[in-house]
Amino acid sequence: MTICSCSTHYSTDNLLNKLDYNRLLQLYADDTDTLATHIELFLNDVMPQFQDLEERVQQLDWTGVTSLTHQLRPWLAMVGLTDLENKLWEIEKEAHNRPAFESLQARWISFRAKLQQMTLVLGDELQRIK
Picture 1 (tube, rainbow, N blue to C red):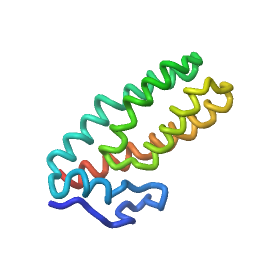
Picture 2: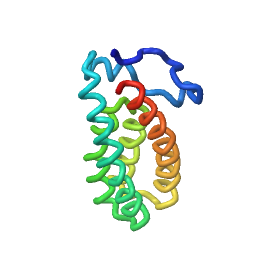
Picture 3: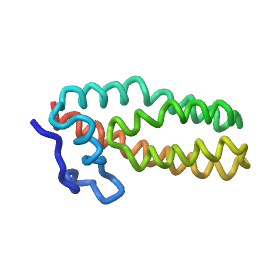
Picture 4: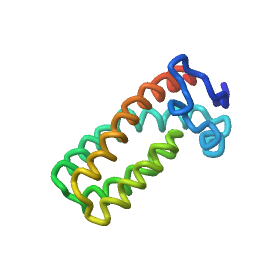
């Protein structure tokens, strides 16, 4: 089975709701077993770390936010969430500059909502490639 390169694979899909299949093809070619393993790791082991990130945002722990976003960004890339990787990079840069809480919180809320949407897309992709 190969990685889908179609842009509208999901019935709930729109341009904002898709995986970066070009990135996935670069990383995995036709190795869907490794892709499936990375998606499972992301959903089961990495996703809980985003709750820790939320707590750090709420605590105004900008050093912790910067550190954790830096650790989590590669995972987003590895599962084809390039748009979210870029948004997390923006959060990391802003947190590094010790922002006003409201500014970073607004960015975080937007990121979190998109991440929740994309976990459903990842779950669908995992089922499709298995």
